[in-house]
Length: 357
Image: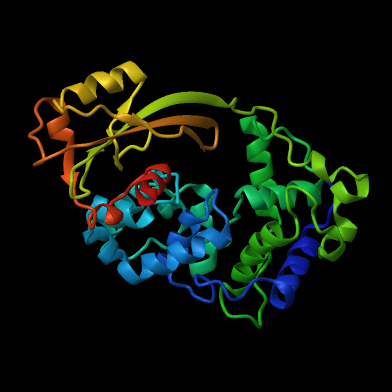
C-alpha cells in the first residue's frame, strides 16, 4: 500500500465539498435518529429505492420515541417491500433499547452504539462520526471498495486477519481536526465523502476513474487492476427453493394470512399459507370443505440475495360466510379485509400477487 494517507483524507474532503451529494433527505443534519434510520435502510439497498421509504418512515415515526412506541406489525407494514426484514425488526428493538436504556438519547460513541441491536461496527462509526464528530473509521461495502483500490490492499477480506488489517488502514487515514474548523467538521466531511465516492464514482463495475479525486494516487488504477479489488474469495452459493402458496379469499375479498414464525423465510411478516409441495397444498385446501377446487396461477420466481424462490400460487375463493378455522392455523392466521391487508407487513411478492388480483 503506497497511497499517502493525508493526501487521501484531504482530497476526499475537498471533493465532497464541491462534488459530493448534499441533497439527500438524511444529509445536512447531526440528528442521530435520521442518520441511523438511513444507514440501516441503505444496507444492501440503493439510494433511489430508500428515499421514498425514508420520507414515509420519518412522517410516521418522527422520533426514536415514536418508533419505540409502535408495534412491530406497524413497523413491518411501513417497511414492506424494502426487503431484508430483519433490519426492520432490529430497528424496532434498537429504538426500544435507546428509550429504555438511554433515556431516548443515542449514545455518542461508536463503541456504545455498536452494542445496540442491529448496529454493526461500520454503522456505529457512521453515526458517531457524522453526528458527534468522533474520529472513527467506517468500512461499509462501498468504502471497502474505495480504500482497497486506493491503497492497493490485496488481502483476502474473507479472512478475519485481513479484514482487521483493512480496518486498521482505514483508521490510519482519518483526518486531523483543523484549528479553524468546528469540532467534528473534518470527520463529517471525510466520512460523507467516502460514502459519496463509493456510491457515485468508485462503482463495482465501470468505475468513473476519470473524475475521481484519488485517480493519480490510486494503486489499483496505476496497476490497471481496478476490478481485482477488493478481494474476497469466500462466496455464498446460490440455492433454490420451491414454495406453494394457498390464496384463500372470501366473497368480499378478505384473505387468510398467516404470521410467519421466527426464524424462517419472511419471519414476522404476514403471508399466504406456505407449503412444501402441491399435494400438501391440495390437502390443506380440502379441509375448507368447499365444492370448488383451488385453481393454479402462473408460477414465478422471487430472487433473494443468495436464493431463488420458485413460487406456485393457487387461489381458492370461498362461498358464503368465512368458515371457522381449527387447529394450528387458527393460532397463527386470521382473515384480513381487502382494505386492511395493504397496511400489514407483507413480503414483496405476496403484496404484488394480492394487488394484481
